[in-house]
Amino acid sequence: MTHPPLALAHLLDLPAGEPWGGLVILHGAGSRKENHADMAAAATAAGMAVVRFDMRGHGASGGQLDGRAIDDVAAAAALLPAGLPVALRGSSMGGYLALVAAAHARAAAVVAICPAPAPLLARGLRTGRLEVAADTATLERLLAAHPLEAAVATRRLPILIQHAEGDEQVPAAGSRALSARLRHPASRVDVSLGGDHRSVQHDPSAQVAALAWLREVMG
Image 1 (cartoon, one colour):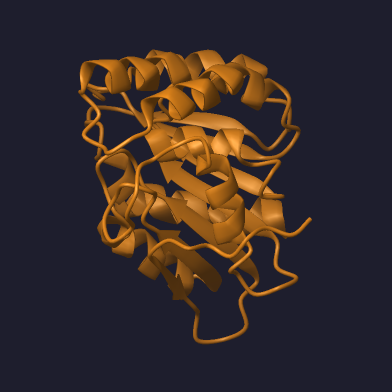
Image 2: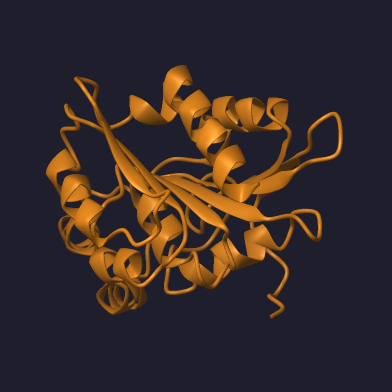
């Protein structure tokens, strides 16, 4: 399957030697690619090629976030060196997209950090809590068509969900509930004590754990 070129602001980070895998980093609503430079640096140091991009309506990418979001994830994955197994790593809205776009992007594994369920994202769009330029109608159709629970239950690939117990925006109970739907034996849900909505994505120990897990499940 081929995908249109990614016409969004992006960065491609390569390791010093030959990469053993590729990683697409997906930011959350209101964020941007530069906010995940720490994970990109950790992943390249671990030998992965990394793509991070500004979603539509974010950072240096223009327009509005819309129903093309899943296609954009696949287009970003296509920027990685050919032949590499690819993982998706996203936080909050990016965690949701990592899970629902996994099949379309032909991902070999997913790391989802505090993944926001579709109803929570849709409510944020309607109330304006999500600070993002969006085509609400097409984005809500995407959310309705791709519930998080179904995406997890129908994906027999390794999935690591990381969440902080103290997350004040996306309750950790939602991630715990997803654990019963995980189908791959290497999949798991890790909930850390304390923290907040953004703590896990920038926690060096969580990054190291995720990268070690990716190395194990991606070979």
